[in-house]
Amino acid sequence: MQRINEGVPCALCHMPAERRALHQSTDGYLYDCPACGGRYSIGITAAKRAANGEAPIGLLADLRHRIANGELPRVEYTAGEWQPLKPVGHQAEP
Image (cartoon, rainbow, N blue to C red; front, top):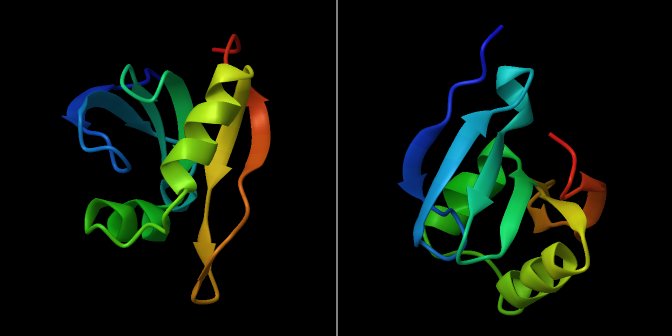
């Protein structure tokens, strides 16, 4: 199955980025954002809330810090709360 990237605004910083759907449609997206410094994974609900400006203060800085350290972080919003960022891979992985 071919991975399809689409040009979109970054869910978190709103600058030009690319994203692709993750394996299962319910898994969310993998964004690649030059302004954020690399790739990150985000759940569907978190992406919608972040795109609407509902992300907590400090999330973007934490995300960029983790990307700069080589992590591929996951952004999640579950049970009505933003979850702590967790690494789900490394920036060098495909």
